[in-house]
Amino acid sequence: MTTEQLINLTSLVVALVSLVVSIVALRISQKVVVYTSREFLPDIAWNIDSNERLHLNNKSKKLFTIQQVAFLKIESIGFERRDKVGYVQVPFIVLSLMRGDWKGISKFTMNSHNAFACAYVCPYDSNMLDAIREKIKVSPEADSLIRYLPSLQSVYYLIEIIYTNRFNETKSLYLKKQHIHGSGYHDSVITVEEFETLLKRSDIPSFDNANQLWNYILENHHYVYNVQPPTEV
Image (tube, rainbow, N blue to C red):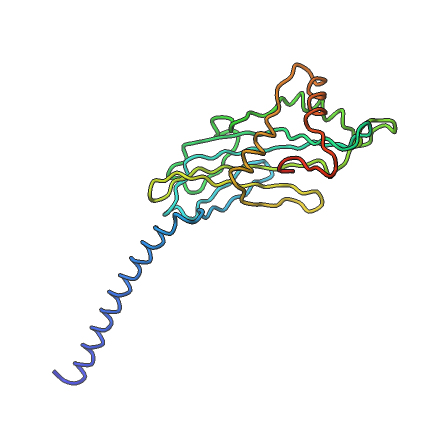
């Protein structure tokens, strides 16, 4: 074997060894990613369009599988009181959707046409809400006992994503899209405790008429200015 042939053979052996090392390293890194995924949240791109459709894209579908999604819209109505120091701010659920058969789908759109149930709490009676809005005029009479404040009006969305990882463990991810007066919408990841608090606070009892509802919110959703509502929106 000539020197040139020996050099070529040596180079080939080195290349093969490098390839084997690379393959082993790749497999090890893949296993490391799987095991460490237990400690991380799934990479999910999401947005809500102008028609209030939720678009989800599970970008980490090799590690996490989305099983169920809950999607809620909550409208917070508020006003300042002139008959009593403080203000009223009460959240109403106006959109509530849930679907639990997304298994295996990584990219999808969720709306009122393809969801199969309410998400924990169904939307509040729209006629009752219209009656309450009618009481809160943007330009009330001078002697009105309430004063409309834009800063007390808010809209936010809550999203609960239940997913499984490669170890068949079921976990949850909670997202919030909140409108802040003067600065638009802001997206955030929240805790299960905040999700449950917001949901519970928005579970307003049903009443026979708007006057009963009005009296309820005056009694139960009145706050003084130095005391914020729980998990204020």
